[in-house]
Length: 604
Image (cartoon, rainbow, N blue to C red; front, side, top):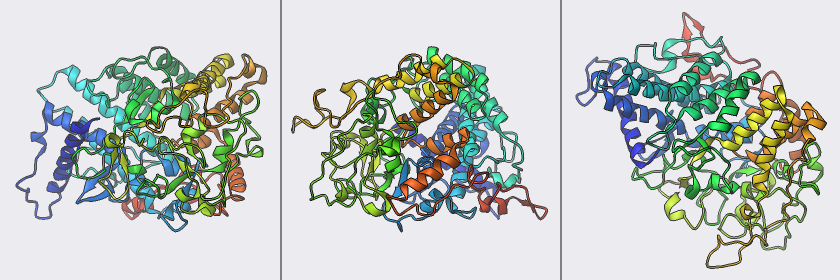
């Protein structure tokens, strides 16, 4: 939320650990400095623990000077933007760096991994850590006597919203997950494996119930910008319905969010004027922000746990950045931004119109960037040779790439801080960069495109078209494009007459969706999500829920393997790879009466 809240989160996390540890002491002696539940069963204690539940969203912690996640592993493994699982596995990007650097990511990205991969156990445990914090808040809340009913309801709604978030992340990752709530009353040890709970029933109805409660009981405005409000809960509830293909349930909620929703500051939801304002610390928490993770830099914690640590590897290799060359956008993604003479995408044949790259060309050698028609969102999403890399100067190509032959010639961009404001938003306190750029879990353009999907499925194709065009129209404003530099003293200054590339983008002519039919309209909507939300961790999960993962990803592997070596032999196997394996460690821990209570996903 803010620096103060991050510090409170650290205190709250410590309290949770003390409570857990004191009850499991093998001597059954209470440590002198430990707190018991009675010391927290009051308004102040419950609110501190609620902030601790918010703090678990990013999955990070700072322990003994080492950057780790809440389960004890590397922070990037559990990054809440799901850059490994959502974007690398979805074809947005390559692992990056060199093949032997964090090579476990490659086994995940090529679908060659198994249930023993520790990444999955880390992801599982981080989400359940968040869930147990929410449950503890709800457990204590029933005993508090110094709060009004309205205050209790608000806290309960925030805790249930957060619990819904953690469970929805587990559900889309693993499908078959056990449900643990505040009725599990032994809060001495809140780990899910203690209860030997089964994972045989879908938890979607319970996730729906949490978001429904939150939507009905949360305030519209909040005292701190990072807290959830009723409209964030509404968007999450509608998204939960969408993931189950309950379009008729989702559609009116999305429409309500679009027409009436406001931010926690009371500002009506809208698209910000410039696309890049969603990825700049100076312009965050804006009218497009439905719900986001609040990051902070140089907050006095001594490390980068609160500074977007999950993406600490994802900066160009070399140059002005200390690390690490991961998360390199794919050629397939770059080609997707090619447009025709009307400024529209090539929905089916984009790879037949490839964007020129500098593969195999040294930075000292001459290279002229692609001169064809391009969607301007490309150069706010992907760093490519000869184009401005934010305000750091022109991307030099191979000098900023660790191994071109392995992962291609491109660099990530949406997560990178600006040079002009690095004193405020860059955090150098770790071995890899940190920054204070929030990660937006749901933004308004995402809501518009999800609503368009529902309209195309069960509503009005013209309204679906209008929502897609609203997103595309924002990208048409030349003042929001990447420009070449015209003033060396002010590298952010640009001129609408000097775009950095040949940007040509248009909206779909009125009636296109209706005239082309439902299936074509859905194809256009799906493609627009690929463009608008690229490198934001959504792609793999979208492909799975659309039933398009097998066809799209295997075509991606075939095409991209002709350019890079890292994904050679990769293959998506249907009826298996739609979900990741239940961690073997959790299956082993769930044994009860000689038998595991957790079922493994099919095919693992």
